[in-house]
Length: 444
Image 1 (tube, rainbow, N blue to C red):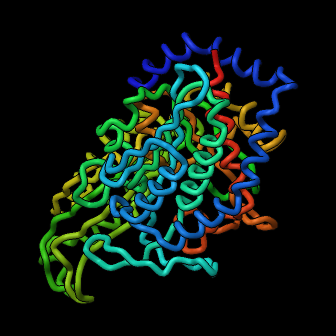
Image 2: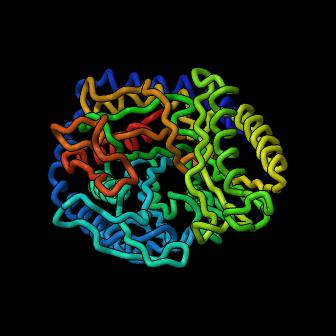
């Protein structure tokens, strides 16, 4: 985050006044019919957006396997007359729209594409029955995180913006990214990092990037916060090595099952008792345990994995250091040894402060007054959109997609079999993309 803050400080100092002026200009021009014209254009293409969403929902693909998904998206983008590049980050797609008015600014809009190894249980007529291969196993696959909606909304924005080309000063880059849910086993980089490495933000050089994610929330509302919005995510792997023995003679071996239970308790206690959650929200969860094959044999190995979610690099590093030492100590008490490893899945999703302030009135143009909250609490879920923000200023915001009449607090969450999106929110997302792009390019 230190590197990112230094990068952003220069941007804030040099562009805050210009951004503010642009926002004021956007708000103080009653004769500007842009918002109304965009709303009309979005309403006209909404049947296509719904159709795209349902097709993509019914045909999900896992990370870096989005071959058909990418081909479907590229075909539609080419039909819109955009310059399309494929194969960036394996299955990633980048499309470029050059506006018809003079302008040097370049803005990017991003959608993720991958689905999850989840058995869908929404009951929708277009529910997924697809399967894929994950960890060498055939698994059900579903868009249980809303990426189908993200793709449809960004396609819709591309359609509207391409038809409004004569009103666009500058360039819009559309990024359809694979493998947002993390790098598949054996892959060194996830989708965002790999697309960056392969030039997705270059030629043309992107100045700022924006993205949307559907989540449980009041239908059609948009919410985010400046600075740390979504947690950094690390994968933790622990392997305990002991000595196999008969379950009736535990003293004749080294009991990794007992050691495992103490390791989990130690991690939970360390997190709860050494970090102030009001200053540094932190979650450290052990999610999997694999040990043993028979009820009366104590195995010689226990394999654990989990996730660490943090909002501060210094406190994260300190917790990791103390956790590794504590795990080694617990293992040694039982006569076992421990291997500890950590791998980052996503960096902190850090919304540029100046850009966040500028964005609020623009999103209100898209969603309506009272439907935008630019001071939302942070969330411990993670997003690899953060890697784009590590290169250029950006803002990532959420779109409430809970079904009308359903309580967001009890609605099926992302990554669950019942997660679904109310399709009435799709036009809000399309309008938000379009208004954000045009207003950014209209800045002085």
